Length: 334
Image (cartoon, rainbow, N blue to C red):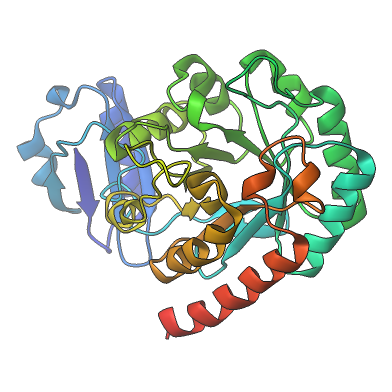
């Protein structure tokens, strides 16, 4: 249930309504927009008489929400959420480039790539310290040492760092990580999501391999229900019967989610296609359809990468993508 308040509502009137709602055991999400304040009632709303609430002098309208996701719902929060990360942000007028290697391999490799992607337009550095791999015999990442190297790269370049968490027990290692990534395989690891809800760090939540948008938003809801509203959604392709690409990039999700949720949505064309030469056109398409940013794998020597070399761009190729996206945004936002 949401209650839209009149723009004449005072702070004391708003607080009085919030106190009443909480007194019956419900939680309240308060969204203050430029022209109105929206109260989102979370919990068993049968405890509240909707007609009584609608009859209050400062209430403009009351609407029951049928969707199970509440905090992530745009009806609760009409204005777009902007997630702040250090000196940059995701959402709003800023287009975010998150770039870097699939996995952290060495200090020389990581810092070299970090310097290059920053020079070419990246606003954040990605790199896998813990790597979920289909085969137990594949490279699993440098783990804690990898995070230490990411922190060093951050000191060298100033780029905020993004890396994936595999287990809630690893949270103490992520103290200096700017954005914690939840990978596709962990999108429905609800115990992990609950723990991330207790933090206030931005969470980059990737879509699961075979999950609907509704399920994806419900996973975001787990994080937000814990009090952490700093969630970034990342479309990275879903598994279909097609075999010419690693996954099938669902760009329709960007448009649909912009209607359903206030959370920023970025796109990962590297994991979606699995083929480096397809990354550029899919990145352009993502920018054209309204994505808030891109997450792209960049390696200085893709042929010898320890992980996902075939889908990784060279720094020069990343620079071409960044320039092309800038031109597309000029047209799309005109």
